[in-house]
Amino acid sequence: MSVEGDIFTTAVVGSGYMGGGIAMVLALGGRAVALADADAQTAALALARLTREAQEHESQGLLPPGAAETVRRNLSAGESIESAVAGADYITEAVPERVDLKWDILGQISAAARPDAIIATNTSAIPISELAQAVGRPDRFLGVHWMNPAPFIPGVELIPGPATAARTLDRAEGLIRDVGKVPARVADTPGFVANRLQFALYREAVRIVEEGTATPEQIDTVVSNTFGFRLALFGPFAIGDMAGLDVYESAYRTLEKAYGERFSVPASLAATVAAGNLGLKSGHGFLDIDAADQEALVAYRATAYARLSQLRAALGRAPGL
Ligand SMILES: NC(=O)c1ccc[n+]([C@@H]2O[C@H](COP(=O)([O-])OP(=O)(O)OC[C@H]3O[C@@H](n4cnc5c(N)ncnc54)[C@H](O)[C@@H]3O)[C@@H](O)[C@H]2O)c1
Image (cartoon, rainbow, N blue to C red):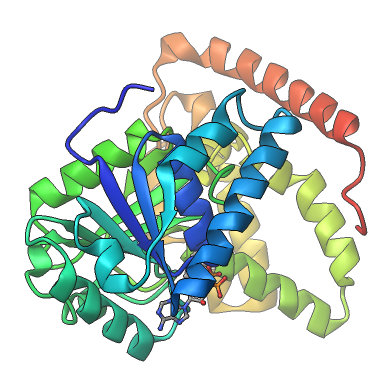
């Protein structure tokens, strides 16, 4: 595999669920990856687990032929955090989500890393500005937030902190693209974009259960077979523009009467509708979809949903659900 950019050697500190998945993607992308954990034995066990998993994924056709050998060749287990990160161009931490622990680990990494090495955190929700204080030379530090399971989820959020250099962000984005993922730059706010949205949905779902309106099983059935089904292909703004923003506005008015302020019509939605921009049917909405593409978009949507239904039928029910 040809390797683009200037990041060849990497280290992952914290070789659990996320760190292991991230290490596998970097290794598959042709980077040398040194794993580190709380002790050498844990890192060595992670190395054995990841090479075994890569072999299983290859046998199942989930990874291309030769993938397991690439992972075996590129992955190694470090004796310590210091030795794993010392020669790396790019280092990410993926230790448990505790501010004190992340501070400690980021301090150790930045003391042992080369001054020009990029240092990333995979935090789910802690502001990058808060963690940046633990890093010497925070211009080389940023959030690179992967989703679980990292080998198979395409998107990665890139979050610059207040001191992150533009070049750090560009280099990290280049790496993420080159290992086959889809990067999205987002601002440094708690939860970033993905988890803020994900947790808003989860909170409302738990409330519905608490009210006795539906069971967890019923909610999962509704979500994964209705609007959640669409989300595999389109984001909320594309879906809103296709549905019609006037429809959304009136739905919010009804919901606000029942549930109060948390369902009030967002001001910019009201303004967009008031300006006559209702989405696809009026030509403009929150997105500016070219009129020339609209017919093709509707046809794509039909194909995409039909194919997704076929894929789900072929996969069958998820075990245990
Ligand atoms: N699990 C998810 O779905 C998910 C998704 C996105 C981001 N994250 C974030 O990724 C990070 C890691 O989460 P995870 O689910 O992989 O956790 P995990 O518990 O599976 O892995 C954490 C790893 O860190 C190691 N570790 C603990 N203390 C250490 C130390 N002092 N030095 C070095 N290594 C140490 C553990 O041994 C373990 O291997 C967290 O910040 C989490 O919020 C998790």
